[in-house]
Image (tube, rainbow, N blue to C red; front, top):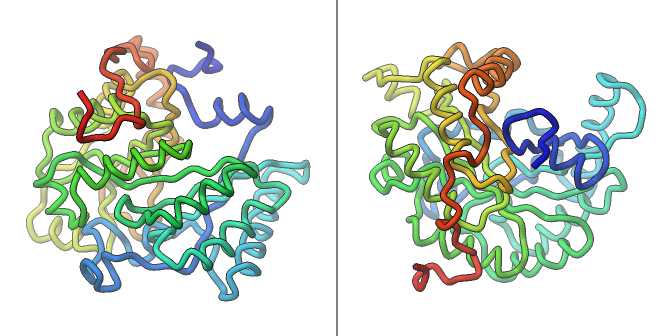
Length: 327
């Protein structure tokens, strides 16, 4: 396997392999909310989620769905080209803020079609929840997937029910398994978000979540360091009763152990994550993402670890097997 000198199957490598060029991600805001915020499940959101719905880096939504998405893409493209030069670039249109399938399918069609029809967009990525994937939305995603690749990103965060209740996730593991089965049955690529460092979880439990995903038919994963952001319920909890957060060294060794457990074909979209510096309370060291990623590459080499070196190939389970009948 050739990952261009990196010890893991990075998104950058995969995009160059598929499209023959470097691809940049554009974070978009579709003007949506979340069942954890509008009262359908709760009004407070997940305890770690900021007021921006994890979309602080997205371009602002300005009304009129189709025009707003086109303008958001153009603004982001202009900003990237000013930074990197005016030569042509390729982009992933990433609907990031809140829950991006939590709307009527006609509205979603307008948003997603505006993004996928942009000539410089190579793929559409939609961040959502497993409990917000009705069949008509999957029909739309399957239809658009015939035009350009469509990825669905699911925020699992943990497989442990006690933690899921604590963070107010709002759905159980069976719901996730059912959503993954239905997505893969339609040939839709699926990327899973996991948060490392959630309060009360042991290192062993975090690795259990990764081992679980290593057995599933997923195409990508985001390993996210827990960020404690001001204005969240997690921040209040941390300030009132502080809980341990990772040192940089602890996190690097854990994330490397996670990568070792993952099948080589799974694309790693993220190893740590970004947080707005104006909101970040802890861990402070995570604010320098470039330093963290450079240190991670060095630590991979020191430990001699590559993706999949601790993976058990016989553990893989296809998403085309209904969860309740899986071995």
